[in-house]
Image 1 (cartoon, helix red, strand yellow):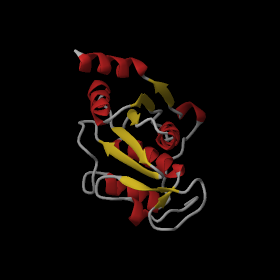
Image 2 (cartoon, rainbow, N blue to C red):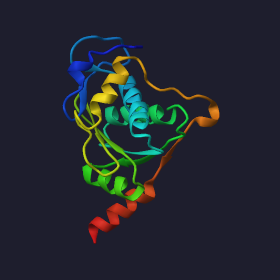
Image 3 (cartoon, rainbow, N blue to C red):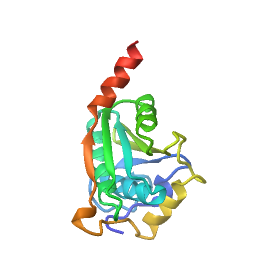
Image 4 (cartoon, rainbow, N blue to C red):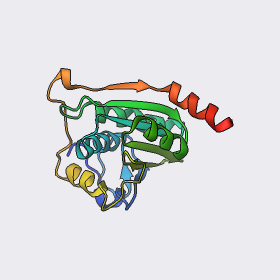
Length: 174
């Protein structure tokens, strides 16, 4: 695994989390880097066989950085040509709205200080947890089976769906 991390300490029952360590190698418990977000999203697309992913972050610099890396993981997943729909800064309610609207899995990336948390959700809006798919993602990463594109034509794309975020905001105010 390039830039290894101590997986058992960063994969919890319902989230991936740890203290950001930049892009340096670390096997220290509880330390992660933005490359982990790439691995997680590529493996999310692979394990769910999704054609897309909804992404929401909390707007902090660190969460936005991890969100950029996360999106690159999905678009580079084998032959899926996944579309990452970035709704921008928001919360779990905005993510749930995006998941319902697009009917694809989603992720919420948040940070507090230097701690980053990635929470994954299935296309029905339920959290991906240990026992419902998160362990398969961890296993793929542990075995260095993070998917890569088979060719340039198979690469997906990242789209910024401000229209969905604006519609959600208008509906919430009504």
